[in-house]
Each structure stands twice: as C-alpha cells, then as structure tokens.
Image (cartoon, rainbow, N blue to C red; front, side, top):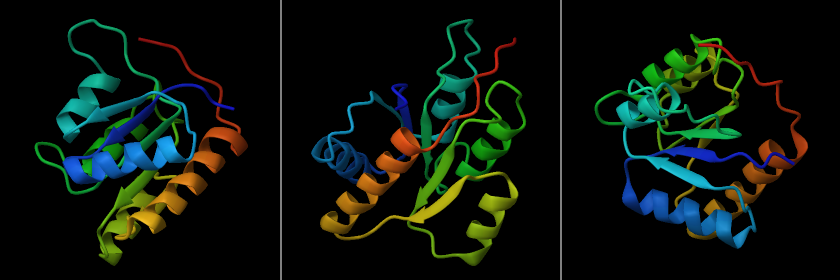
Length: 145
C-alpha cells in the first residue's frame, strides 16, 4: 500500500469537497494535498523557494484549471526525471475527445470523467483509491536536483 500523499489539483471547491468526502467514506487515509490551480500544483512539485518538493503517491489532475491548465501541468510532470514516473489520473468533467487524446499523448496513466451524482463519485473514488494506492506497484522513486 502506498502511504504517500495524494495531490488533488482541482479549482472547483464543490469537487474538492466531494473528493475529500469520498476518500474519507472509502477509508482512504492518505493525506490529501489540494492545489486550486495549475501554478500551485507546479509550485508544490517543483518549489522555486528551495523548499522540499511534494512527491505524491498519486496525482488527481483536472484539465480545466486557472493560471496553468492541466495539460501543461501534465507536460511538465512528464518532462522532469524527478516526477516522470508519478501516477497521474486525469479526473475531469470534460467530454472532449481531444482532451482524452491529449491526456494520454502527454503521459496520463488514466482518464476518468467525474461522475455527477455523489454515489457514483463515491464508487469511482473507491476504485481509484484501491487500484492506485493498494494494487498498483509504483515505480521506484528518483532523486535528483
């Protein structure tokens, strides 16, 4: 089981609340770190102030974000050796085929549409948590500067 934090990159406060509640109800005990835009997410992963970088067990990434969109965040994650192997699940309301294609082309591990109903969201969070935090064997972490 992976006990590192989950980085939730989501600008919609309701979706943040639903995700936190769904993980709590599914007994997923990993710390949830929330970034409300792409710029915050990149700062957590690649701090410019010399602070320690966040190395999450899982990144849940919305595409439609202010400041820096989710696809650019994904591009930067995959473009850096320190974060290239982190599991990234695109979790979005987008129904655009282009977003699916671009997400996988840029290296997303999975693309999940956010369910509208909380019960469906609860089930989706359970599956995501079980697979990515308990079943999946993560790549060995890379160090470097």
